[in-house]
Amino acid sequence: MITVRDVESTLYNWAPSGLAASWDNVGLLVGAPDREVKKILTTLDITESVVDEAVQTGADLIVAHHPVMNCTWHPVQTLRTDDRQGRILTGLVENHISAICMHTNLDAADGGVNDALAEKLGLLRTEYLTDEKIGRVGTLKCQIPLVEFTRFVVKSLGCNGLRYTDCGRPVHRVAVGGGACGEYIAQAIALGCDTFVTSDLRYHDFLDTKELNLIDAGHFPTEQVIVPELCRRLDIKIFVDTDADIRILRRIRRDVNKRQRTLESVMEQYMATVKPMHEAYVEPSKKYADIIIPEGGHNLVTLEMLENRIRHHIDA
Figure 1 (cartoon, rainbow, N blue to C red):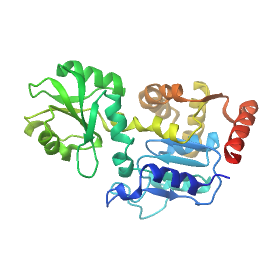
Figure 2 (figure 1 turned 60 degrees about the vertical axis):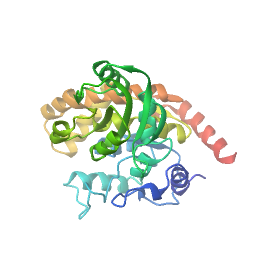
Figure 3 (figure 1 turned 90 degrees about the horizontal axis):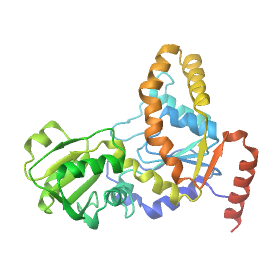
Figure 4 (figure 1 turned 120 degrees about the horizontal axis):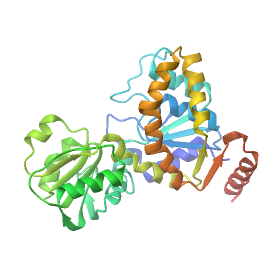
């Protein structure tokens, strides 16, 4: 039997807790360590829709990058269902879904977020950007103009757009920092970089930096690159292929009946954000799947195949 503790131990072997920043909150944050795990859902963030997906697909465990509680931006003082964070945590507990979060330790780990980002952008001969192993520095195969490189970043990371400033230098030696790494601009300059790709840069970062090109490619695109690697590390990669009509009907039923939202507001949100985000980030992940399951939990043939595969893995 594979337990939550077994999965946490496997992830810590890759990204030890000692690599995490002092303010961070990593590891098993919700759930019982000895609970059996049969299905894992991987994600960048644990949101209400992710919890709903875990429930619908029968996942026992969610492995995420960003902590779901008790870090700088998610202090938990109360647990209330009229609060978004409270609904996420109660949804996990009520449905017996555990949550493991690997954050700054996975940023720093070899093969983690920043290595995945550097590889995605074609960097060679990489080294650490900081002494804490946050960020990476490497070189492109050849020097290219900045505008050409920005187009490559958008295509490689699936950005909806990006912000950048041109210091007048072509791109060759590049620093990358998944997520918010604007505080490391000085290190990128000291290591002789001409370009720094990161996210969440401030107005004055762009205004005051004259020595290198700054590219803000967005928090999600610069860290989403780790999700395929999480899937690979957790062995079987499964994509539950649910018809679009069923997805929208489930959302309407939940938001109108349980959250007292109007049908118009649900449809507006779906068309404006949910559908585009699904097409941009969820649907493309299908190509990383070992198994694609149509009809979800109603597909008994596939479920039996999965059960036999997991049993073989446990008995091996």
